[in-house]
Length: 161
Ligand SMILES: [Fe+2]
Ligand SMILES: [Fe+2]
Image 1 (cartoon, rainbow, N blue to C red):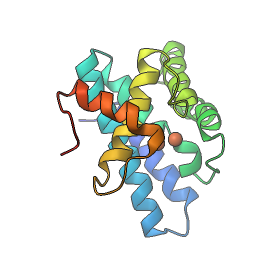
Image 2 (image 1 turned 30 degrees about the vertical axis):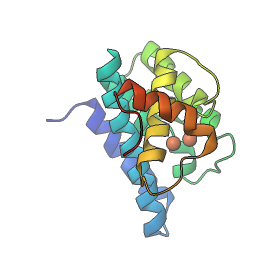
Image 3 (image 1 turned 90 degrees about the vertical axis):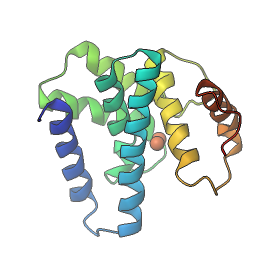
Image 4 (image 1 turned 45 degrees about the vertical axis):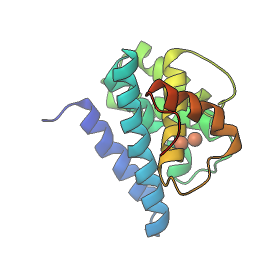
């Protein structure tokens, strides 16, 4: 069943492949895994927090678009918010309010130490969940520990295992 989320995914997948012509398997695996991982955690958190599921999933799909399409990681949140705005506007299926919600969450997603609006927080949390759950054998970074602990508590778990 096709809907705008699937059309957006087609657009993003193609863009990432087009902007990574060297087809570095390791890099592409990390990009695709992180993009879909964060998107799926956004879905779960939106269900848990009674937020709009599709809007939340869209935040996850687009949040690191800047560096995944050839840009640097420096200031990728702000630059990615502008890029996401262009992509969403070009699809002609998103209201201005939806675009504002999505791009604000993307612009703020690197500010993990600050508390913002519900969609901003959802995206930061989903990003942390994917970083921490990609491989639980890897150490959790110090700057993500507090958020990770509160996420585990939100899901009724005290520790990762
Ligand atoms: Fe990011
Ligand atoms: Fe990310």
